[in-house]
Structure formats: structure tokens, C-alpha cells
Image 1 (cartoon, helix red, strand yellow):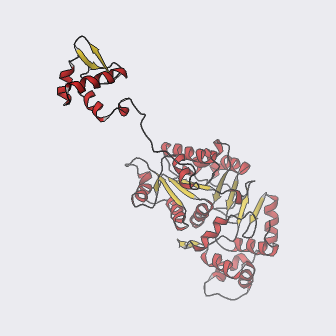
Image 2 (image 1 turned 90 degrees about the vertical axis):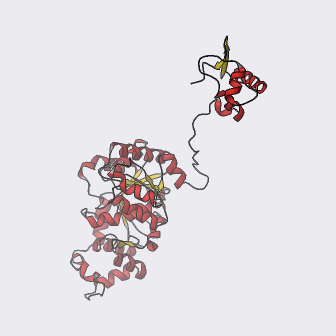
Image 3 (image 1 turned 90 degrees about the horizontal axis):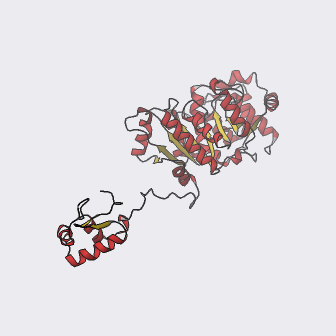
Length: 379
């Protein structure tokens, strides 16, 4: 940790005092500095922005030094701007505006796990519906696994559905992954994901803007989505209904100038309606595989995807004239060359020459009655 210790203490205090993504607190911390802001809040004077009133009760129980010591005993570190580990991508939130009255650069992040935050880049956020389908889970896991194997760190929110599938895809590829929570990193939410979070923290990182001990709340989910988007070079949404928290993450990614992509589902699926609408209006790029995603988030010239093509057949290698004649050759009963020429609309001499050429490559053959398609050539 390289940030000054007094600044770290002030930021730990602000992390406990304010709610994640509180615009007033984040902007004032950047403008005044965390120490000056904390001193101003400690003064028993009302503020025009109401922030002093909001944090008054929490001020009475504030002990940042004890909090940092307690966190350290639990294997939790507090990473702040100025630390070598601080990920530069989070600083982009300063100019990304606000959404649902949340925004700004976090005063710090609480982290549990061996993966350093500055080692996440390039990161890929994979998010989507909690009520995911088998199709969505499979695609999310496949995308996460392929991205992980290519050296891209998968970031998600550890929720049910697509988030869990993304983490599992990365873990299945034996690569670290990052889970950003809407509660303290010492909490397990959802409770059913204890084993998953244990696996994540073994090689990756569990991250939260909320101080240890904080419970998950709706507003904290909205705030954490911006952190997910900011930690990643791009965001992929796999299944999201018309109203979805995953779309909130995608909106943050767009505001940050990051790549935003969506995996299409069946056109009749309500679970993919939000993704389809954003693909339709151009705010998401359609992707269907991990290879597509890698091409989007990679550096110029990296992970280029060849357009899908059907296998080349013998017919593909024919000239237009040869194909014209071949279309006139009957399937089963042989006919004379002049009959083929008449049906094809070419001269008899040319037809005879073309038929001999097609015979050498097995596309036509002769019997006692004349010319017909070769046995290897489908009707």
C-alpha cells in the first residue's frame, strides 16, 4: 500500500460514513481531499447539501483505525487511489456522470483474495439475468471460459443466473475471476453462493465499495454496477429483460466509453428483450461467442475472427460456364451431349469439352445412354 496512512484512514472513515456511489461524498472527496472532507463533516455545522445530517449518526461510532485492523485480521485490504494496486479504470468514473443519483470515483475498495486489482486488466464484465435459462448459462460460461483462457479477467456480481455462470466458466478454466458485491466482502450474498465465493476468493478477488459488515441494499446494487463496468474493458450482457440491472451495468459501460456487447436469445424470449432492444438501437454489438468478444475487447489486430464460411465444394471451384452445363446434366438416366447442350444453352462442341472436364473431377459420368451426374455428386 503506497497511499499516505492518514489519507487511508480518512478514506476508510468516509467509506463507513457514506453510501456507495453517493455523488456528494465522492465528488467532495475528489475536490477537497478525504482529510479535509472528513474534518468538515466532523464539525457540528449543517451543510447545504445535507451530507452532514445524513452521516451524523454514523459519526458517533466511527473508528477507522480499528476498522482497518479488524479487516486485516480477516484477510481484507482497503485499496485507495494512490496505491499501486488501484486500477486506473476506476478514475474514469469521475467524468461518467450519474445514474439513479449514483456515480463518482469510489473513496476506496475493500478487497478479499490474492488477485491484485491492477492485474485485472484487461477485464471483461459478463452480466445478465438472475432468472437465466439453460441456454444463457451455457453461453455465459463458454464466453467467460474462452476469455479467461486468453488472459482476460472475468468480472461479475456473484448473483444468481448469468453472474454465477460467468464466474463458474472462469473457474472451470482454472483462471481467477472478480466478484463485485453490493455488501461487505465479509458477507456472503446470496447465501447459497458461499461455495462459489470461496472458490472466487481462493485465486481471484471479492470486491466491494461498501465497508465490511454492510448488508446488501437495492441502492448499493445500483452503485456497484458502475464499479463492475469500470473494472472492465468491455461488458457483455447475456439475457436481460426490458427492465434489468444488467442493462444498468451496460449503461455505465457506455458512459465510460467501454465496449458494450449483447448475446441474442430467441426472439420470443422475454429474458432477452432488453438485449434485443439495445442491439436494435445500436447501443450493443451483437456477439455469439467468446471469439467475438475477444475481438471486441482486444487490442488492434488481436483475436481477429474470420467470417463464418461453409466448406468449399467441388462446385465452388467451377467456372460459371461449367456450372451452367452441370445444372443441365440429368441425375440418373444418361443423355447424349447434344441434349445436354440444348438444355444448358451452349454449343455442342463446347458442351462435349466441358463434359469431359467435369468427368475428370468426378462430377459427371457416362453410361450406355450418355451423360449423367457422377455418383458422388448430390442430386
